Length: 404
Ligand code: SF4
Image (cartoon, rainbow, N blue to C red; front, side, top):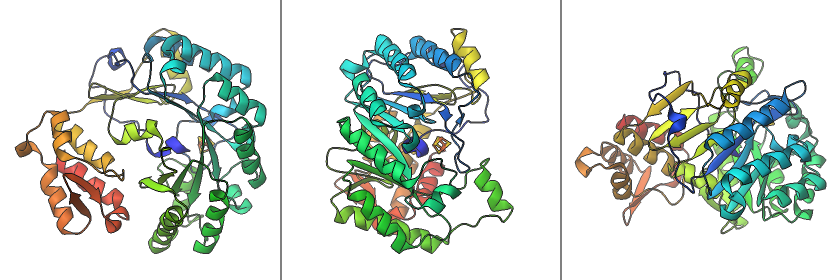
């Protein structure tokens, strides 16, 4: 899903801030709403999400609304309803959720972008129209693959034609923008197949595309199958070829690579996610959702029962929180910001973190990365080079370590 690489893992450290959910979020702070239900759980997914059937969905909706009332920011600039699969909810449930969001935040008047994550099996024209009427400006659809055998491997419940039907439904509803999610790097995938699939998706002219390489996250069935030898990772060189082919095709068809794995037509970058990469503040509600306010990052319980108990009792609870030091904030800003094509301006980052150039321990590491040809500086902004892009995670790790 589009949010998949911008959410925070639950930290194992005890809360460093006694009641972080009471930190006031400024008006305009972006809002993330986590709907934890899906049709089925995919074996590669490490988000907090569960198959919805048999769950107390009504009770969770009630808790979500209570949590919104408790601490959602007023007049958010952007809203992202992610999951899970928000489109799995019925139109009636979505109405209640969006009306509660409006009552608390007035997002319909303030937000310049309201994204809702959808999956093909639960997005028809009626639902797409309802979402647009409720305030959605952007629908993000999880195609993931155009190969039946890969969809089966990924445990997806939709067929290839369902993805195209969902896309048509979104277009018929005249939503402002559509984003499509794809995953590359399944075992056996060839570059030729991937290019063919990507061309078919690009031909639809979605305003935005997210293309992530398959990962094996701890605690998922995929990582267990990998350990047991029931699955294999593709070779690193093959993954690089797929990554290069993605960037080359996107550029050829007029999509800007505004982030390492995200591509858009001009003016259609996901503003909500750009705020994450710029290390801006946000409020997240729902089970497992993270928030970042006044330099404190904290998360909700990754359990439906634990989260509901807190939200229903009129008091959120956070199993973890981190009060970030100025240097930690600086390192994270480098780490996240370098993913963006716009890069980072170290002087601006230092100013935001209240640090002097002498205190900036990331800068010497960035200079070393420059000497290695992985970063380049131009008029005060630092960016990944083509070679650096292919090593983005390792580079970010080095910068993060330099600041901690
Ligand atoms: S549909 Fe999305 S959120 Fe739900 S289990 Fe699958 S990958 Fe995870």
